Image (cartoon, rainbow, N blue to C red; front, side, top):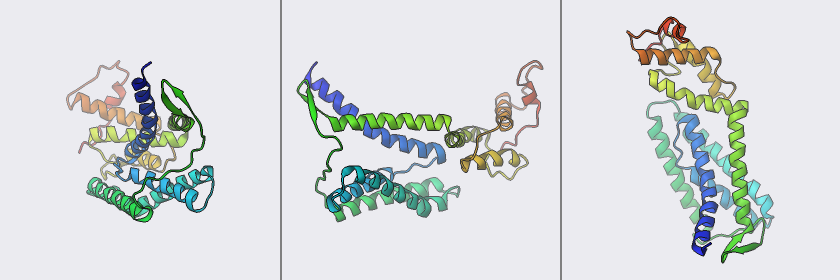
Amino acid sequence: MSTQFVQAAWGGILFGSVYGLMALGLTLVWGAVRLLNLAHGALFVVGSYVAYWVVSSLNLPILIALPIGVLAAAAFAYVMHLIFIRPVIGKPGFDNATLIATVGISIAVSAAAILIFNPEYKVVPPVISGNFTVSQVQITKQGLLVIGASLALFGTVYLFLTYSRLGMAIRAVSQFLLPESQLGLQPDDPGPDRHHLRGPWQRARRAGGWFCSRHLRIFRRGLLRRRLGAAGRLPADHPDADLAAERPLRNR
């Protein structure tokens, strides 16, 4: 096995695990609220520098500094959401406003980190020290820990979104947006079919439940009407004939 291949594979898996975790966070935010958070990297910057400060200034172990850094990043994200994101959600120009806001936050955090900690390269002690060699390529135990932790987090998020009540609610919000856009409907639509949409949307937004069969039938009915058109008809023995025969959704 060539040295170049081993080096490329090791570097790709190691850095790919870190970038994959960042992409996972972006995907969750985009799927839940359709928000492209360009300050997502700034959250990693906040957490990393807080962990570095705890180790270098407070002289605490890295195993204590890492949870503190995670909590600091979460607190910063929560404050950012309350001040810059939440006030404009659902309002006209929501996409552009959040895009500009998150870009500005990212620039501000990067500049503040350079001013406070200077632009020199920073190093924190590894959680696990030691290494071994494979085809003249140094494989660190710290890197293996990063890869293993990333895979464990991927699996945890998958199980959370698939089997937990809150995860189902998050997926419900994301999946609701597709038929909503195809039918030309909005969750706060003041039309006669508003009661069909507002309930499941608000419950999912509160992460308190999932769509019941009645609401799924409404979406299937609307999609059938959209597909068949005004003059379209299904045979009487078709399993969805009763849905197509019901009162159509108002198409905006």
